[in-house]
Image 1 (tube, rainbow, N blue to C red):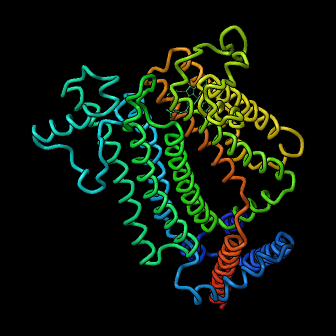
Image 2: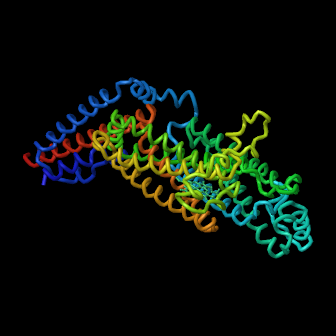
Image 3: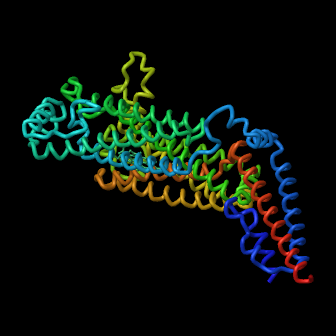
Length: 495
Ligand code: HEM
């Protein structure tokens, strides 16, 4: 019985959060007088080992100084911000990221249904409500009828059809406002009530500014589709592909920023809850065998981001409506060079802008670029998956990182399949929207893998160490109380 009790204590020991480390069952039990001292010895050994291994784990000295600072509470005195973020902040950030994911996909649908140019004005406050009366609807419709898109593409559209595309764009804008409000208001609250660290306060202000800027980019993009020069013969009334790409890029940066900040908060809480497991994780993540893997995941994240931006150029130029086959593009694997680097797109007399203008404005080359980047991304994911399962990396890789690389492989497979089918079937709306969502999901996979591979900073490690030492001393104190009680019981019995 005692053996089971001892094992239980050792296993539960440092796992227990402070509040729960009361050992009531122990106090209730009748135990052999010699047993508690053995448990105590074991515990003391564990604590000595913990201190020793911590000293060797953190040779840089950064953690040691952060630990000293954390335990003296000097940082808490110099700033009124707490040392850790409230857990609710983590959930709220991840929830906000999910909302941004949703609006990105909805934004894609707005573009694919050609609804984006239906509201011809930008009224950040008064535009929150749709037209309320028939006269208001007629007035909105009249404004749209003066736009290049109506005159050149939709001259037969009636009011009922207009209402449909209007509501798509209106909902997209309202969703943007909701994201802004549900982010900025809690940001002010969390900072005012000191529920976040000073560093997180800076992050939250940065994200809030980016959300505001995103609204501006959105309008700047729509404006490019309403310009009068789009009435010129040969021009196609659609927004600038550069501005569409900037709008998507800002949304994706905002999403990634929210997601990583939220995951960091939740991970720190997890570490503080289970400090012994956290110390093992830190030890694993400090393995030099993971260095190249960590760099590769960062590189892959940037590559996915670049592929995603090149996809936005494809979408912005409607370049998915040509060369609807894969892997070939016409008779070969690439169109002829004269078509890829067409002087038509160059605006300088010396043709010095020929290559980059074609890369960003010529639909044939833009599609080829996207294919090349997509295939490179897919190959890199495959290589990463294989690398994570070979030699020293296989032995060192934490389980959750290995799982993330498997997830990445699946997401890349789905994304490439969606891309190819979108192309072959001439960009049907459901497939194209799923392809856009898939791009964000793939990026999420890479962000999560990178997040799991990241060794937390010295300050977090110090906090974890403090929590660990605190748990050890609480358990030791409880054990001592327990053994005293047992000794007293034995003394009482023998008397
Ligand atoms: C790693 C893989 C890929 C990523 C991250 C990716 C990403 C993207 C993104 C973000 C868009 C913009 C969607 C929008 O704004 O609506 C896009 C569009 C597009 N992609 Fe991909 N893509 C990948 C693979 C592929 C592949 C393999 C193909 C086919 C060869 C492909 C074909 C297309 C087409 C045709 C569009 C235009 C769809 C439209 O007009 O809405 N993609 N891609």
